[in-house]
Length: 345
Image (tube, rainbow, N blue to C red; front, side, top):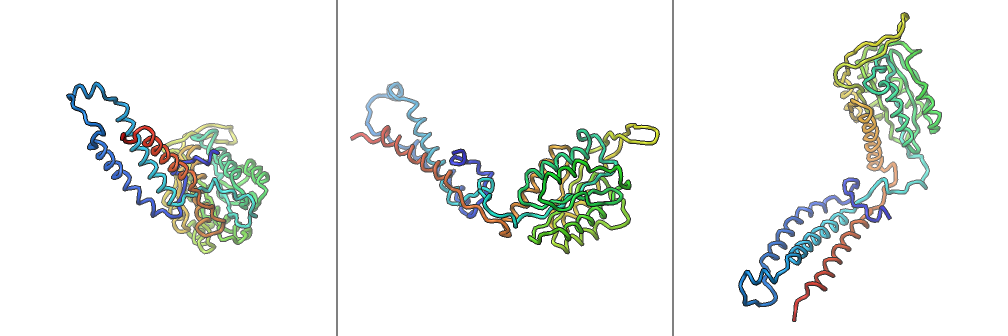
């Protein structure tokens, strides 16, 4: 029943959006009806003065008639929204289909020393891992792989549908046994290679590349890796992680652990170019909530792209909730006018 009255229009998309242009007439309809109501003459002639008439009059009737006009406009609005054929992905029961149309995804995560900066809690790396696992929990039927990179890169988990194994690998991933530095090109190139080997050839292949630094690798140029991704029809969503300014970071050395303050340096121009050339998108995450919202946005973008390319069955139009409201308001207006305001003989 909760879906029966779901009127949150911002959650819907529309099969026939041109009908929405009719919404511009609703204020005009209200204006005409209110003007006609104010100019309407009474049904009974009255010979007394204005003051006497006011004493006999009732203010609530005028307010009620104005309320009926508002309800009439809302009924018209609901009818127009229903004509636009709204549909909602979340209300679409797609559980009966097989999952051959899932997305192939590789998460390429920076595990360099700067990811230990503590502007996220407890640090950037742990927060990124936590959000990545939440993202994995929200997938259904997508093959997901994992690449870790710093000064070098390796496959932490091949593409898999076993999300529990994948999340275990995400939890274990760190930069303790990997060369220091930040080689964005090598991380992206390794992810592209992983996807090329593991892809199910659905036509929907995605890399989520996350970093908090500036490319310092020499083995592969990031733009060359981006061109390679483009040639394989892989979209790359890039995420820059880190707050503005300086962040506290813990440093492990032979002489013990100490804290230092480091400047947040993210090559946003490079990350934007990588995203643009592969038809992806660049995001900046300044805190963990921002990072969660980015993953949600990527999820929405990919669902929309799959729908547009018919990799997944389209949900049916669901105008019923708007028709329910239109019928309810129209019936309410008619009943009140008929029983309360019918003309006297």
